[in-house]
Length: 59
Image (cartoon, rainbow, N blue to C red; front, side):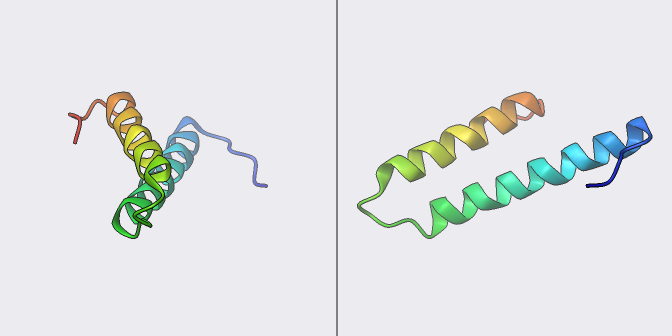
C-alpha cells in the first residue's frame, strides 16, 4: 500500500474509492437476480448515502 503524502493525494484516493463503490452498486442494480431484492435495496441505500455525503441530490 502506498503512503499518501498530500491532501490532494488523499482526496484523489477517496474519490477513486467512491467511484468504485458507485460502479459496483450500479452493476448490482442493473444485473440483479429478481430473487435477491436485499442486494438491490442495499445497493440503492449505498448510492443514496454516497449522494448524501458527496452533496448530490438523491437518485
